[in-house]
Amino acid sequence: MSTTEFTTVITGAAGFLGSHLTDLLLSKGHRVIGIDNLITGNLDNLKHLEKETRFSFIEQDVTTDLSIEGKVDFIFHFASPASPIDYLELPIQTLKVGALGTHKALGLARAKNARILLASTSEVYGDPLVHPQPESYWGNVNPIGPRGVYDEAKRFAEAMTMAYHRYHGVETRIVRIFNTYGPRMRPHDGRVVPAFVTQALKNESITVFGDGSQTRSFCYVADLVAGIYALSQSQEVNPVNIGNPREMSVLEFAETIRTRCDSSSIIEFKPLPVDDPKIRQPNITRAREILNWEPKVALEEGLTPTIAYFRELMTRGVI
Image 1 (cartoon, rainbow, N blue to C red):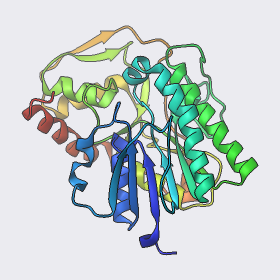
Image 2 (image 1 turned 45 degrees about the vertical axis):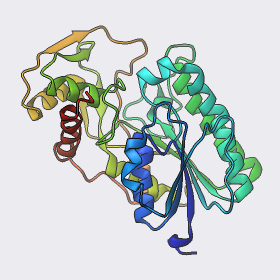
Image 3 (image 1 turned 120 degrees about the horizontal axis):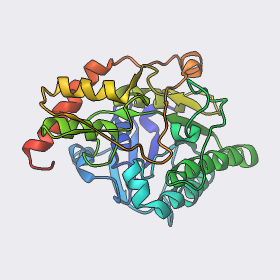
């Protein structure tokens, strides 16, 4: 079967990652059906596809229904609130899409004999006691803390995905996504990149939680979706980390953003949120060995279109 014959479903298609994945799959010749209930997704992310005949969009809540007419070859299950602000404001919806939404997506994969890729997260590792984090690490998660609704939703989704693979023979793939940045991020979603860039462009105080010594690793979105695509085409069933192993402190990142935005912002320190991970860095050995993948875009390079995107939003009065 050639890629031009593939029909692919993407849940969460109007989100930051879902929309970039849609673009990549269309460029590979797929026909793409995007699904989103738009509680955190934004149709502006798909506006450039209005005349694309190989793309169609369905506004639908995948926790209640996920039915597609005709054949389906691939499913990418990306539907979920994915930022701290989102899952703190939408805790029940986050749990439901991780459980019920994943169940619906796996059921569709089984019914259509399709391969399904689950978008999991580095948050399954919680506040890790192992560094950097390999896929073999089981994590250090507080199931009843405020972040537990997201962490445990994704851990459950992984368990259900493996159960469908083992019990029903469904072709499954699991990607554990680490911090990603790029155009189409929501300006007020509470994540560090949009928060710092927006504050710097406005010359407002850049808010650093704790003393800023906690670390993060930032992967440019084009690298991330390339890795996800490579995983979808592989024969690997077990989870694979996709992210950039270049680690830096949050304070160092804030200073980088301030410089790149030519900003007069001061850095303001605030108390660290509950269960905020102190370290985050992917071990991508398996991605390198199995997928022949590693990130190519340096932070300095990826920040250029990212900052330009937020500048454009600012000129339009969106932020």
